Image (cartoon, rainbow over all chains, first blue to last red; front, side, top):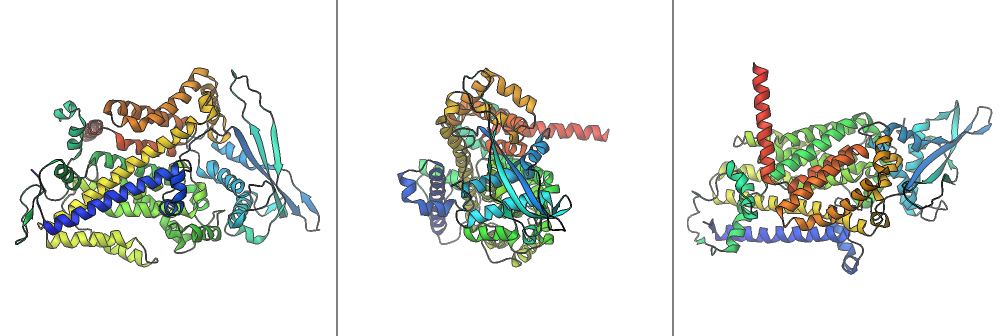
Length: 210
Length: 396
């Protein structure tokens, strides 16, 4: 037993069916091409694909692939402060990542503030500064610097040791994860550091933070 | 209920998943408009497919469990992050309003948080997000709460895209897809109250809320709700009421196809890229995430797991095999169900060992779209039984 429709109704339904099915197939194909390695088809239709996928349907499913991250990246920061008498002090390094790790330990549901905020801000900084010489690529690079600076300043506050903060410096520590005990592989032990330049801090950087 | 267990083949599963239908029955007693000759399709495979596609919203239990799963995940996340909400998405965020505005101008992502600035508006949106998530989970006025769920998910996440992870990404996508489904046909407050209609006050309220923002696509679902209301009132038994119903079924069926396709894509991408990785090939890959400081809430547990050669090897090869194979097992119900169970167990493990409970919950909720109806019905019966027993003990 099949439902019978009037002709106009049938026309509407058939048109809608074609449109919806066609749309779904095109949409899924776009998602597939966006997830697949760059290929002849996705390069040819790059603009159209981006039009469908961005901004709301971004795909990023290379979870721990092709290889999982094999280094522990840590971000430290230190500040220079100025006393009322005009003397400048350089303070000790503070482990920002170490603070995150401490908050995650023995926590069954770590917060995004501890697990993602600084970690992803550093990824963002890294991806917008590919030359490793501190030169930002475009507007996004500048946004990444400001973001990173504000994350650190939120933790430092306005002063350190009772003195106003003048400048801030970051360093990245990279520690290669030791291979499993049964493995023959040799990897360098210890942490390698990379320091960024000093960045000036002014009142504007604190907007809304504290 | 017993024939449910006997049914094996795919066709019966499709028939069973049809479930209760909203609106009047389509197959009988509908007066045709006078003067229009009936256009009968030749009854064949095409006609039957067309009837299935337009006549029912397939997988009502699967749609409901996906709705409940994502609603719970987002509710739990919002409550967990409540103390940190202002730093993550609000006025205290290091990703300042200016930085967000710069990025939004570039990528045109949707967020109502850019409509107004200041703490009050943010607090309003965050708490509305919690309310919407709870109502959506319960299936209360799901057409409206689903749209609110979508709006609040997108608004918060797009305010700062740099604090999310894979779990947030899945919620973001599913919030969009679920709006197009009839996900409250079963296991919802709407399903209990079916037929009472109404909700005009909610519609007016949402219209007023929309007026405070710039014009946009949000007026579309609002207008569609009005269209339904008018047609329901004026032509409750007319053919166009059924046409609307059929359109909604088609939209639901396509959205379910997209949800299923999205889940398949997640697993196949994850699997296909892993195949190329040297660490997955040499069978040591899981050792490394288990030693990433950011993902070791229980170092002792991670140490034990990561130090065992057979465990690491099995996890490594097992994960790749399951993820690569999953899309192809959809052709075979039994194998598919075994893999589905394995993937859910693995995600439950990830929740604990890597400290990613909300990510894992979203992945399990996404997987649930492939759960067999018989299993879902069994869960539903068990839930009802528990409730009855609880009531009896509460009364006595």
